[in-house]
Image (cartoon, rainbow, N blue to C red; front, side, top):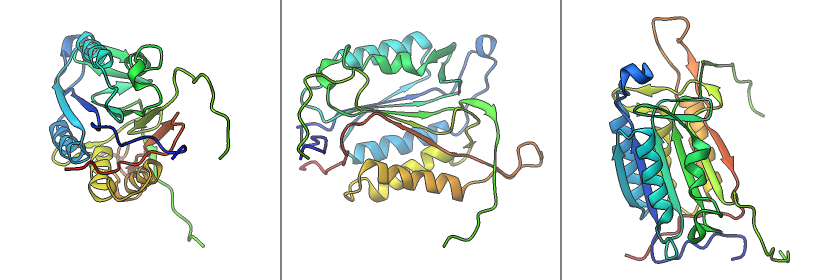
Length: 250
């Protein structure tokens, strides 16, 4: 249908998971991201179940992150439905950390835009960002009781068909449990496992992820500065059609 992405190509497409756990302390001042391996394993399983070809990369420098994604963008995606990039790392101010410093998310995403990756034009380009985007802690609040026919354009914006899934809002901290993984990736994998192939559109799936993170999680610490804090994921969509992960033939 004209209002739906074609998800019937021979391949679902490549899913690159960059899992940065260890960092150069002298260059970044950052600690180990305990629990991130659980996120990476869960993402691998759920994305593979959605028929992605999953490639997990560990502890990449900024240069290595750029190289991996630039090479992926240079590949031929003509027979693929889409591409997905997940970055599990520290972050701040619309940037993510390599093991040796920061790189702008926009720089990494630009390799896949319509100017640089022709075989992904009119196809979904999904970025999952599990990283802090600031240092502010989100407070909780008490909840009250609830009571066709368009002409085809000859061109598209080069930034069309991107979907960004941020674990938190700009400026805010993103929480991670050392034993269970991050709140966001836990919730995303839970919903993908249950509803990824259920026929729900991607925005319906992500609304359920948002609801779980918003209502099922809260910090419990001995420090009043970090106790009873919340988190709210952020969806930024430039998609131009509806997106369904229709099952591939076995």
